[in-house]
Image 1: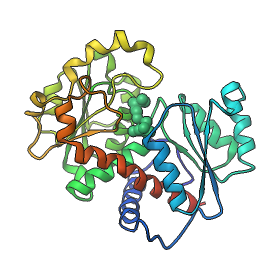
Image 2: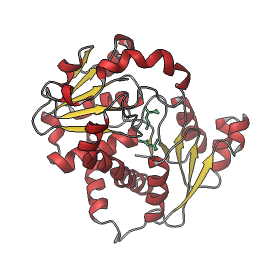
Image 3: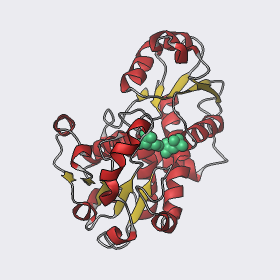
Length: 303
Ligand code: CP
Ligand code: NVA
C-alpha cells in the first residue's frame, strides 16, 4: 500500500490489517519500539478547516518519529493558482509524504501522481477515508473485532456526502448491511450504486426503516464544507432525519450513535443524544490518531 486516497480503492483485507495495527499502536502508545518516520518530513496541505484531522496527524507523525509541516493553502502559492501538479513536483523533491484536505478527489489523485509521495486523503468532497477507519476501530473496541459483519449500520441525513460514500465502500469491502436514509434528493445517485454493485446497501426516505434494529446509527452535518451557500435551501428537507431520542426507540438494544464531528446540535443530532453518546463519539475522535498512525506506519514501511 503506497497511498490512501479512498476507502473505495482498499480491499477488505487491507482494512482489516489497518484496524489490527490501529488497535496495536493504541495499546503501545508512549512506548513504540520502531519509529518508521524517523528523519522524515510530512506536509499537511489543507484547503478546508480542521480540528481533529490536523491535530491527530501532527501528533501521529511526531509519535512515529517524523516532523509534520502544516501548509494552509491560504499561505502557499497553491491558493493563488499554482497548479497542483507543480506544487506536487516541488514537494516531491523535498519531503517524504503528504496529507491533503481539499475539495476535488482529482486533486489528491494528481498530487499523488505528480509527487510520487505516499499521499493520504484527509477529506475531499468525495470521501473521508481516515474517519471511517477511526469509526471502524471504535466499533471494534466496543463490540469486538469483526463485529460489523453481522450488524445493520444506519447513516441518516446527507447520506451521499464524503462520509456516506466512505461508509458505502466499507460496507461493500467488509460485507455489512448499511441503511441510508435521507430526503430523495440526498440519496446516492444511480451511478454511485452501479459502481458499488453491492446488495447490502439499503436506500430509503423512511428514517424509521433505516434505524430499525440498527446497532450503529451514524450522522454528519447536513451542510458539508464548501456547501455553505446551500444552507438556507437545503436544511429544511433534512429535519425528518434528525437523530433524536424518539427515532432511537427503533434502534437495536445496546446501540451506539456515531458522529464524526463537528456536530450541529438541533440539526442532524439533538443535544441530549450527543451527550448520552459522548463516550463513543469522542472515542471516534481519539481513534483518528490511532487509525491514522496505522496508515502512516503502513505507508512508511511498505514502499
Ligand atoms: N471529523 C473531522 O474530520 O474533523 P475535523 O474537520 O475537525 O478535522
Ligand atoms: N461531511 C463533512 C465532514 C466533516 C468532518 C464535511 O465535509 O464538512
